[in-house]
Image 1 (cartoon, rainbow, N blue to C red):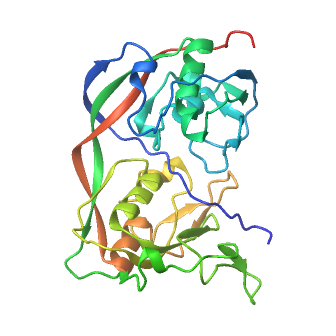
Image 2: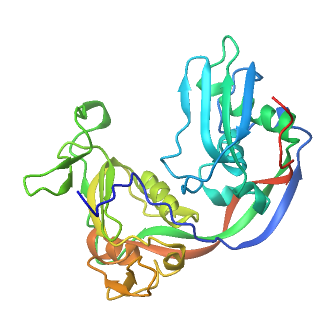
Amino acid sequence: MAGVRLLGAVLIMATASCLFAQEEPVANLAQAADSSQSVRHDYRFEVASIRPGAFTGFAYGDPRLKPQYSPGHYREDDVTLAHLAGEAFGIKHSYELETPDWMNNAYFTLNATLPDGASRADIPVMLRHLLEDRFGLRYHHATRQMSGYELVVVKSGLGLTKSPLPASQRSTVKGPPIEIGMDGKLHVSKDARSTELNTGTNAEWHGRNETMKQMADQLVLKLDAPVIDRTGLDGEYDFMLLYTPATTSALASRILSSPSSASIPSGDGGGASAPVEQPLLRDALREQLGLELRRVKNVTVDVVIIDEAKQKPTQN
């Protein structure tokens, strides 16, 4: 349908302020495999071609930038060097990686062959070796204290519904998560797992069998800042949240402060505004689910800091 854009997720690039860092130098990449990665062997790509790529309009972390994996083969098209570093270190959120600015504007296409015995789980360590060998990448870890948010239950009460079925009894979803209804509009499918329908100015976030920790993790993606689950709620919940997403970085700072009567840019570059049909995220959480995001300081985050990298790789 014309004018409707379906996005798997909306990533808002907000800036988390760093208060101080305790730096921990690392000798080399092989010694510093990210603890979140399940590395079974110290593999290297058997063959790897790195060629200049092109700007696609997608930012780091965009779910449309999906690597192509098949047994024995790995490929990433038109991604920045910062994106490849994020894949190498298992970075889930942009604030966990600090790179020189140029790394966010240097695009490459990687086409690699895996050695015998290697699997998808071994790719991060192979990427780390590749970046070290071909780009001279050097880095270290630092413990940052950042501003973030805590998710709490408001005094007026909870608006979530306990999931009726445990994980072991969930029905298998056979169709797509989004479908066209009888009215000709896009809707979230009745049996869809957790998903989001985003039309640019309105969003429907449907959660199914989600823990509060999982919700906090999703809010991290939307705010690009640490979110800590302080609800004290156990178990899994179903919910639907209707809200107006912050679609530009200029709006990101307003997501927790603007009233429901705010307006958003029309996108035509003329400065015109369109009325907000749904509350912004903070207000929607409080009004519809009985949850609140409160600002907190000194959230401890492990950050990978890129110290050095060449702008062009060695020859294939």
